[in-house]
Length: 269
Image (cartoon, one colour):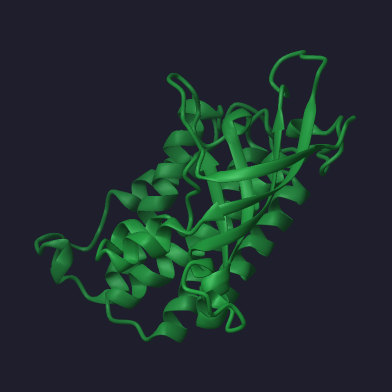
C-alpha cells in the first residue's frame, strides 16, 4: 500500500500529458516530447514495479548499511554489478534511441546519461521507502555504470574492443531484476577490435573476465563467489556479417550461455 504522497503525485503527473500531443501518434511527436514522456513512463514503471514487488511506500525513509564484494555481504557483490550494468546498458540503449529520434550523437549521449542516472536515482529513492533502504554503494555503482556507458558510446574505438555483458537464464516466478543467483557479469575483449590481430579466424574470438555468486538466497552455508576467465566466440560479429544487425547489437550486451570455455576460480576456497 502506498503510504507516501510522492507516489500519488507521480501517477497524477503521468496521467496528464498535454492534449496537443496526446491526439497524435507517438511517432509524430517532437523528439523533446518523446524523451520527456519516455522518462516519465520509466519512472512510472519503476514506481509501479517497486510498489508491487519491493514494497515501495511501506516504510519511513532510511539508509541501508550495505556492503561491497565480501563473502558476508548481501549477494556477494553481484547486486553491485547489477547496478553498474543497469546504468551502463540503460545509457547505451537510450543514447541509440535518442539518436534515432533526431538528436546528434553527442547531445543524445549526454541526455541518455542524465536519463539513466535520473531513473536509477529515482529507483534508489524509492528503495529508501521500502525494506531495501537507500544504499550509498548502489548509488555509486549507478553513477559508475552510467559514466562507463557514456564513455563507450562517445568512443567507437572502445566499443569495437570491449563489451560489458550480462549472462542470465530466467526461471519462472522470480524477480528478473534481482535474480542474482542466475546471473553472471563479464567484460568481453573482442579481438576484432585490435589492429594487431590480423588473422581473420582469430577475429571471431574474444576473451572474457567475469564474476558471479551463488547460494546467497536463504540461509545457505556454502556461499560462493567466483571469478573466471574464458575464451569465447564473438557471436555479434557472426550475426552482423550475416546481416542480422539487431541480433548482433543485442549480443553486445547479453552473453549467450555455453558459448565459451571458462576457467573458474572460487574466491572462498
